[in-house]
Length: 340
Image (cartoon, rainbow, N blue to C red; front, side):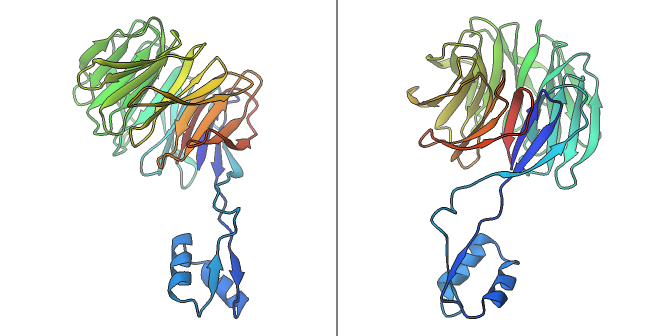
């Protein structure tokens, strides 16, 4: 599933339709189709391999490629949705908005379980901890808040930034929170105590986006200086500066295998970089600025959201840089995208 949040105040869920099968030399096709309703794709293929006397099944040549559709629209926010994120177990969706609130949704029922109130201005970014115990948010009120997802209560209000907090990320082991701000800094906080662990002044200007690698080894950030910067999460030392964009880097993401960094920019391009070498692997051009990027957990797909007249969500093949699908439905800027 792809989830997108937009300035049209809505969240859209784009689901992958079930894969189709073709059958050859079958006996009672109606009986076989009834059986297949209760099996997963892997089970079907397994049965086909083991018991060819029962039936033979094969994928059509065009079927393995994923496709998304069947949009569901979640409404509730009264102002633009600026960020969406999904828990690692795929059960919870969190969204933040210019209406100063955060909404937590049960993805199975599509119902709101909590409305988190406390920020005094627009909430730019939300992140959920790996065990879905905590939610972290960053706001125009210059604060980072840590919430309990069980109770919906605020645990910490993290103060120190002197500018809007545009992006937040939580380390995979739930030890650290990293925040990116328009005060041109990154701050690393202890999730356990709420104390500042490190102040990072590396960008030459506002910092718009931050991501932490699955290994908790790297922090990647993008900003007004048109660069993507890679640093060590624990050490805070600069590892690499990735240059090539000609505009503000609005969004960054890291692949789950620590091989790729993806960045989306106002220069109307998405760039795919090698995390280890810093080499540009793909430059993907779009007609309008790229506001959000995200990678699938299996490192096969890249999803992007656009704005300024192009309100689409696009799906790309990460290995080739080719577009797979364009999803239409939003009527304003797509500020955030993620995958389940």
